[in-house]
View 1 (cartoon, rainbow, N blue to C red):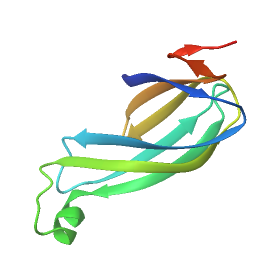
View 2 (tube, rainbow, N blue to C red):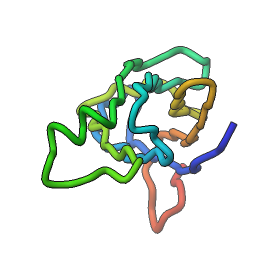
View 3 (cartoon, rainbow, N blue to C red):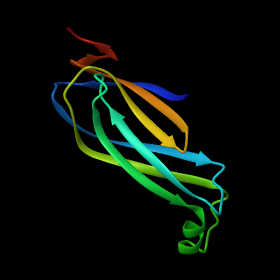
View 4 (cartoon, rainbow, N blue to C red):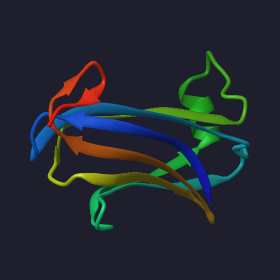
Amino acid sequence: MHVLSFAQLNLEVLPNNYSFDVSFGIIGIDEIKTYTLQFELIDPDDKIMFNTTVKIDKKKMDEENGDKKHLNVFETNARFNNLRFEKEGIHSIKLTIEDNTSNAYFNVMKGNLENGERKN
């Protein structure tokens, strides 16, 4: 398992609908193989908040975008609009491709911030 990052998200109230982007890249994509990528967003109680599966086919990407080569790299952005956060605590984003898993973690807290510090 690889940890990609750790961040903190301070929301004024919970539950809260929050919009954000997740950007990531995968290097070493074989041009003759199709991969299955699973993307999950998981709450502090290990409940899956969002789950999707995407097929990655480098040969098809090259055919559809003939003006640019992808150099065995898959890069993408996932846009979450008004995702509902209901709980404080450590949330995670889990990416699985084949038998490889990477995680990114972020802490969700509620409360107003002043000068970067939580006000009580």
